Image (cartoon, rainbow, N blue to C red):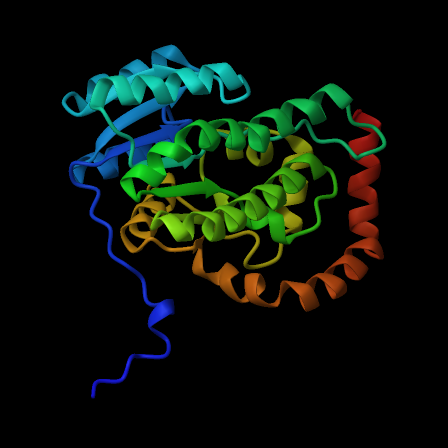
Length: 289
């Protein structure tokens, strides 16, 4: 008698995207665009959704066949319903959804931040993920497909000076974990993608072209200061889809932190709270606000 591998439930299931319909938000640039290119080369039919009409259409034109541009703001719930409907009307099905669109807040402490900026970040980074995924789920279940929500390694770390981003990404992580369990009975799957610093236009604006951002960047210890390219990030997501992986993390140096964060964060929070250089940076952020 052949015994079943007791760890077989941990083994990844392969998922070929060739011929599948994939909707990606924020696909006009950065990680989303590189992911659209990569999945397209693997044979997927790609729906490029972006708030920037010009960027979305340029990306679709570049990919030519098997690519379709949809203009949609993830913060607009009805717009995302229409985006999903456009995918169905165009291809008759939807197999994979990648909720990738995101923004960063203006640097500020909780005390000094503009509440409207808090709402903006949450509406895109968190509610926008729900708006993307929710109207697609019946189709994902029908095709036994896969959902990816893009969180961040920022969800592991304290968010002084930019807490709405960390808060939104931590909440997205929980959304992805819930989806993984809820979709399991149908044969569909979900995964959470976590990235450290990705070398995108958003990163350059936040860390490289801003005086306070540069100061923060110099204070980041390894592995927090390790950067990856959008292509590397996209490949991580694409390979995760191929494995129906519940989670992908890049760069790999973040994996120990992800596993040990419960203990590490206790020490890290204490160290940051008592660090004079951090105090000085926070004062500078508040003075700017």
